[in-house]
Image 1 (cartoon, rainbow, N blue to C red):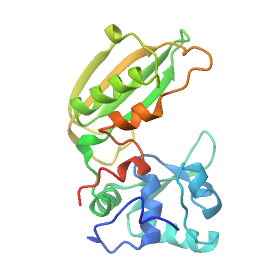
Image 2 (image 1 turned 45 degrees about the vertical axis):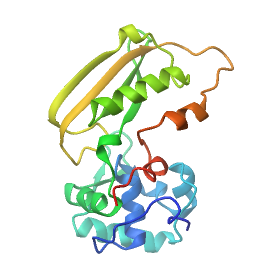
Image 3 (image 1 turned 90 degrees about the vertical axis):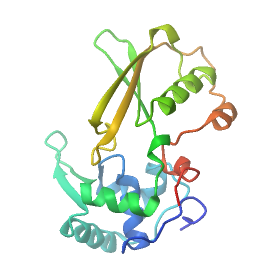
Image 4 (image 1 turned 30 degrees about the horizontal axis):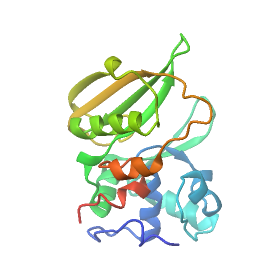
Length: 211
């Protein structure tokens, strides 16, 4: 387990390292037990590390977190699978340990409409962060779109679509119709990293913890 070189903890809670690793991958999504086992933890969550817990020990830990009101479980009616997610209390514990800079957080997702067009949606608690990501996404060819078509809305006391367990003073949402990138076009990840003032994932959070 190689956690120290990626994410630090404040030690402000009584969470064990193993419990915190479970909360890490649930901070912005719900997930199934299979994704939490040590064989899948790193690859399924795009992380360069995993934990060492056997499935039985992990199951007991998950049950303990549920019993303590830190995570919750819900059976999906669509796929009849049990999904685990952070409760508000669990989210607060995770944030106390990982100390994320929420003003630098953003999400990006693409959905296809009935007309076949794809729409990029970027969300952030900061207008400046959302705009910076959209500008970079265009410049480094992460997405292709017409900047004149960008639409932005702000909401007060709302949750992000991913961080559903917390309400933010402001949530900025930027949306724009995207266009297919030319064949063989690759995103310029060096420009992405050089421009990055945001974090979208656990590995990116490592540089934006307020410790």
